[in-house]
Length: 186
Image 1 (cartoon, rainbow, N blue to C red):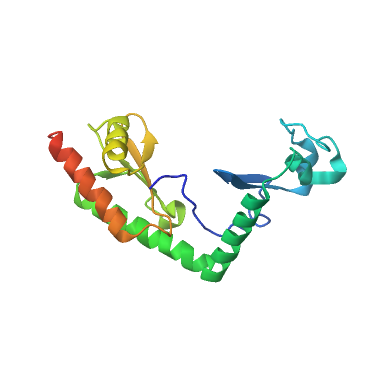
Image 2: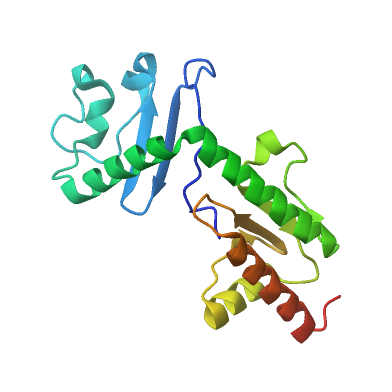
């Protein structure tokens, strides 16, 4: 359950007047650049056409041979998401995040997530002092192969992406309770 998991929410780039936006996970990603600023963005990896303004944003993908398998997988993922429906996926993100926040609150843990559900979608951030985030992260991974992320000293970021099951959230919470008990943290 990390921030590296895919989160789906609709974004209207024209309405929000976004100049550029990127999102990447392992081997896939996207880059949106509004036409009127594409000539002002510098490409740090040079390949054929990197300096040709006629290519507009396409010049940022001139890095050699693309992975056709990754591109087809990315395309299939988009099609699958569209079949499910972006609104349905976003609703599930929010339901799981609300569930996670409710369960965390029962444990007396401080939420660092926005109180406005519109602002948090599937990301739940909590502050768990005196637990040291890195120790908890190492423990959950080494012992149970549960991946969490966060920031020092004690903030934990959890992602409730649409493919996460409620039972997996419950499993994490059980392990979290176990960690607190084993380390005598109330």
